Length: 318
Image (cartoon, rainbow, N blue to C red; front, side):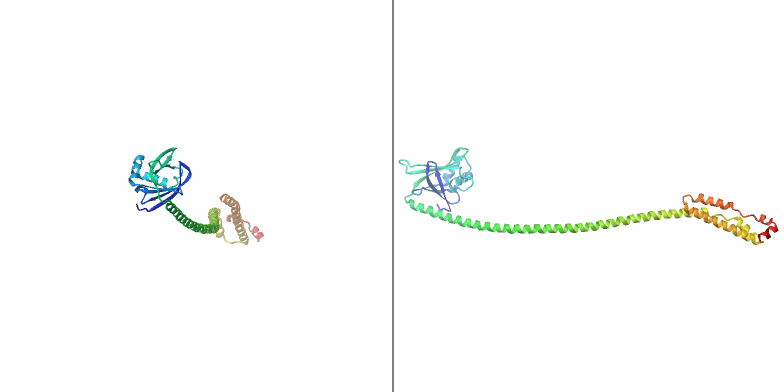
């Protein structure tokens, strides 16, 4: 049987609690294709072989799938795996008269119930020294491999630690840069926001001024319209007295003085009416009518009266 894999482990035998045994296992592809067992207590050595047919038979007797059975067998004999320790036990049947063979059985313990996985017959090795030397050599090689693996893991760990420190520094630098960028962006945002607020206040102020200007223009136009209407109402109609005065012949200077006096009265009346209208725009029509009534009270003497004057009176006026 050409062997490709080897496993060596220390086991305890329930029937021999004060003795230490070393179990060496050799197999080709997997334990399902058969394996060779070598057992030694440091003084003597025993060996045995389990064929592929034996493995299949044991699986059928256990009523287990072959793949699962081979997995449990590997955990029990090699000790490799997190669930191997404490779940498997070994028993050694001593030699009996007429039977120079030992029997090594291996069992699986589950819920305080033991299930026998298999049994192998062991025959004493004629030269145990060679077997013990092989066990020592394998142990040293395994130790060297483990040390090299441990050294490699240490180097990888140091490398990962350096990378972690570098990444941590880079992350801190990125965080600081991010914080600086956030502060800068926030400052710029505040400046832009304040500028927008100033522009908005200016626009609101301009809108208010335009509204006030529009309202002022509306009031001014309304007042101008009312003034225009008041002026049209206050202007007197053509006085027929003016025509009569123009038609009368200038017979004496007293008439001219009397005519100028009437014109002055009319001018004063018009000015008083305009002043009164400006002081009280709410009732321009009534005030104008009142002024007109006052003006109408001052009537010039008719021409007939002037014609009936006594000549002596005219000379007295001169």
